[in-house]
Amino acid sequence: RSSIDQGMVAAVPELKSEADTLAWKREYHIRKREAEWKKKQDELLTQKQTAWEVQRLEKQNRLAAAREQARRKRMEERVQKKHQQVDREYRDKCREVQIDQRMEAWEKSQNAAILSQNGYGIKDG
Image (cartoon, rainbow, N blue to C red; front, side, top):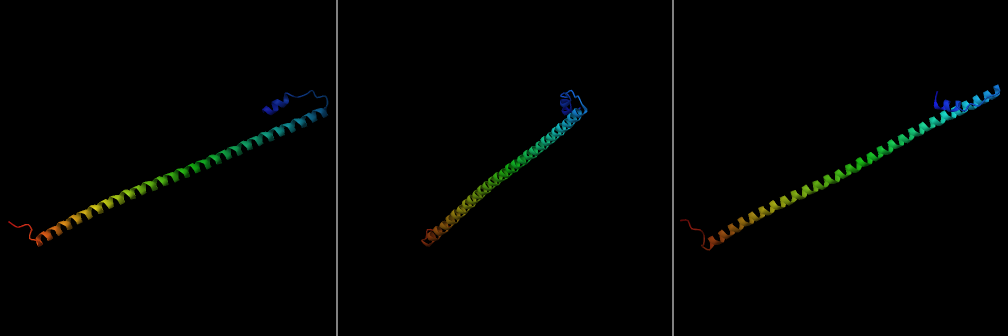
């Protein structure tokens, strides 16, 4: 027997007539149906609450994943900008070295030209 049946059977009064018995049975079945309905409603509510909790957790996970993706994207952009900056600085440095080398070569050639015009050129032995 179910716990509902046991609880109700324990409360069986002394019945004196068939009408009392029918009334008691009718009340018993009404209470039993009400208890079963309440149990079913409680189960449905528990299922709904569980579904709501699952939805809440899924939403929370989606938001956390989106935040993590945004954080990674920002970090990748920072790394990319840093790489671009390092590359730009390297190219600028190379450009400066080339300019300095050209300037030095030009100055040497100009000095040699001036010296040769004035007769101070290097003499071959």
